Image 1: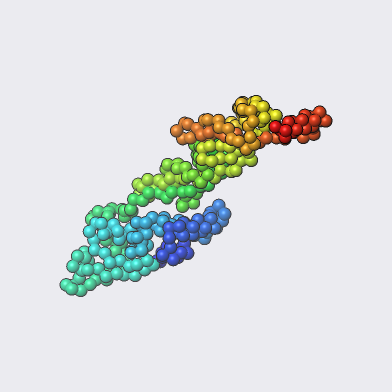
Image 2: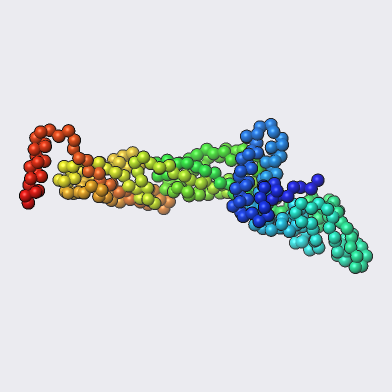
Length: 318
């Protein structure tokens, strides 16, 4: 039975872009995932078929060969590299093809042609790739494993200090596995963290793929981030902003730093605390900015109100 066309398997046209192929695969893989369809052999088969199609169409070189030779492109490519003449069928075809008898081991009259079916062709490849004795095994092209993307959500504190996660991945063979991954300090929203060798398994001695953690950092209710720098609002009593003094500035570590501000500090003014921002991969840190928010006193006593009136009169007359 001929294998289904890989483009039809993923439900995309032959002109589909890499992004369209990836989106179609992810949608179908979720739909037919064995975890979501327990004891469903049809879904399991479909899931594997989807994985096979994506493995080929997501690889530019494999896709080019597939578009030329069809589902048996690996045989044709190996035969071509081994020096055998080819004239194979296109995608979806399982019928015979025409072989030039001048170079065919099956013979044929001069100027004529010999029709060779797929079984005969497969036997020829066994001889070319597995040894002329006929007892060698049929070889397979070495292929590296597929790279996986996995979303990881972090708090700003976790992005600051680094974090660890236990995540479950399911390769195309449908066997889920749980691994522990470490996210370095200083990661940013949208960053992809590479975990080497934790993607899909390689084939025929190929290297395993990589796992990419796609990081999303949740907004913080108090701290605002700009690259490696942080900004935090700091409430300052009116009389401290006027006369100068000391205020406490919170940090992502959970500690507070004493900050001296000068007289007549204005509302909205930013004061830089060097090296108190986000951690960086090289061990350095960004800066923390304390944004002054002057707090106007409330529930004034009669005497306090009189003092403010005196101050206002002095400022008006000057």
